[in-house]
Amino acid sequence: MCSFPDSNQQKSGQLTQLSNDTNDFLKEESIKDVSNLLEINKAGICVCLATIEDIDIQYNWYYDACKRCNNGLVKEGDVTRCRKENHVVKSTIPRFKIKFIVSDKTADASFLMFDKEVSKLVRKTAKEILDLQGKDAIETTFPEESKFFLGKRYLFRVKVPNNNAVDENSTYTVVSTTETNGWDCI
Ligand SMILES: [Zn+2]
Image (cartoon, rainbow, N blue to C red; front, side, top):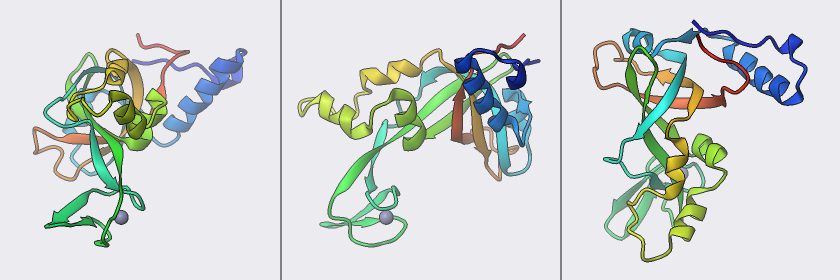
C-alpha cells in the first residue's frame, strides 16, 4: 500500500511541486505492484513504483540514431538509412537506450528507458558522455553516469506490450519517470 501527500496540504514549495508531478502521474492510473504488471493481459499503460536494481549490460547503453526522428539506422553497404523514414542519413547522433532491472517487494521486471528520460535524469546527453569518455574508451563500456541509477526509486509509467501475459520475458518501455521524494510506501 502506498500513501501520497495531498498537494493541497503541502506547504513546502519543493514538495508541492513533486506532489503535482505525482498527481499528474496518477491522473489516469492507479499504481500497480510489479507482480501485477507482469500479469496484465492487454496492451496499455501501467504505473509502478520500483527501484532500479541493476543495468542489463548485455545491451549497449546507447544507439546511433537518425537526427530527425531518433529512430535507429540500417546499414546497406556504404549507405546508412533511417529505419523509420528510409532516407539516407549523413550524420548520426547517439541516443540513450538502457535496459534496467527494476523491482519492488513483489517481483522484478525489465524496463527499457530511452533518451528523453535518461538524459532528463542524468542531466547529460549521450553525446556529452561519449565525448567525456574520450576516443580511447571502448564504446560499449557503461559510463560512470549509469551508476547514478542504481538503488534509485521512481514512479514509472510503462507501456504494457500486447503479449505481456504470455511472454515471460516482457520488456516494458518507460514512457515517463517521476522521482518519489516527499512520500513513501508502507
Ligand atoms: Zn529518421
